[in-house]
Image (cartoon, rainbow, N blue to C red):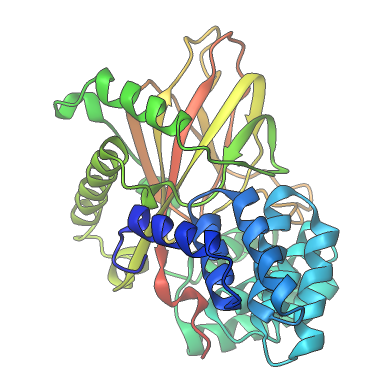
Length: 378
């Protein structure tokens, strides 16, 4: 698995599972692999077998929490994370995972308490977001200074700082990406010699993978795939991954002369994480940011023919995420799209889709450059 040979890893795990081993780590590791590959049901099956061997195994309990959260069963996920902490209170990654559930339920105070217990960059950043949502500007500002000294830039802090500059009429002091709309870059892969056959093969391969749907509360009339699609060892997937990496390199070179924090603090080690979003007629995706990303992007597998100028387009804004608005107007930018377009943008920018009317689906391959140090405990 760690060398990228996921098909061989899956084959070996399936053989080990069939042998009915009494080694709980086999089932936990297999469950984690299937979860990463987007097979949520198989992940649950493996973790439950692990619990049958050891009912207090924290790996299996946490794995079930992740899988049930993915399915949208937030209460069951919280129950499993609670069990992890009852077994071993030092497993603070369970606090982080529980905090994500509590944030989903809009229990920001409780979420902040749990985020504070896990000393990773992503957890501490999301604790800041909870303070901001609660309107506690003083506590947010104090905690932000401490965060910057300890961790440096992160896109989520840039999101919060840019939003605060509007509603509190103050200067955005971060240099992550000043004038963030200037860092939105669109191109089309068909102009680089690629054609519709690549996209058709990708869609056909995806449909044969058996990837389960992920619960996505912001998505209306559509579905999102589970797991990281780039872990799939399939030619069409890996070809598209290579194209995206080339576009990311072009993006970095384009903004190198400006060299904001987005570029100068670019993560030394990162994972390219991708998932598919399919939206049906009259569907849309509400404003959001990718909190685990550094740079985000979308490759448009299919954009239905437009019945109005902006239908099906992507809209960028400095506002979203149920943040306090205080009756302020926020700047917005709409980018019109065609099939084959690829749009790259800082993960700090809110983005959403504009509803459309069509019998054909809007299909997007969304992806993030995810820094590997986000989850490291410091």
